[in-house]
Length: 107
Image (cartoon, rainbow, N blue to C red; front, side, top):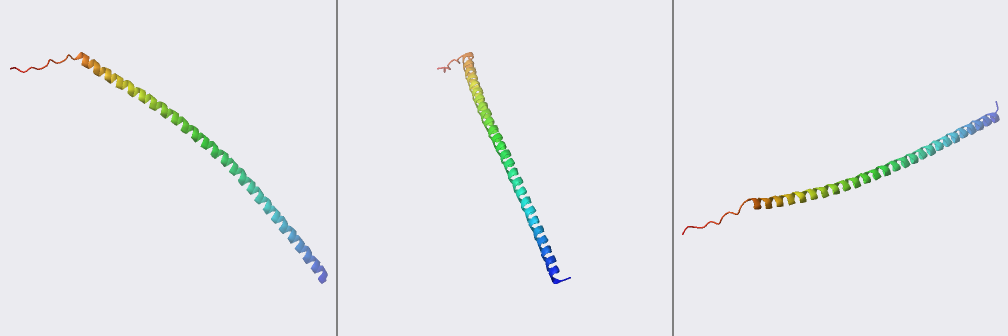
């Protein structure tokens, strides 16, 4: 075997190695691209989910505010009724109890 055929074999081997390296780089690049696409997709899904949770939380806060406002109004109305009832009861008591005669002192 001559040196020429060794040089050709060496060049052929280098060519194959170069092709393999290029293929590996291309595969790695494709995997990176796929991973980035998946990552972006997941970010999008998480953002949608986060927005939905935020909207739901806001809705619940609004419901609680409305419920609390209604409860306060109901409590005020009940307190007003109780106050009115107490006042009328006090007036009834005054009307039911005869006025005490004035004490006079003996001379």
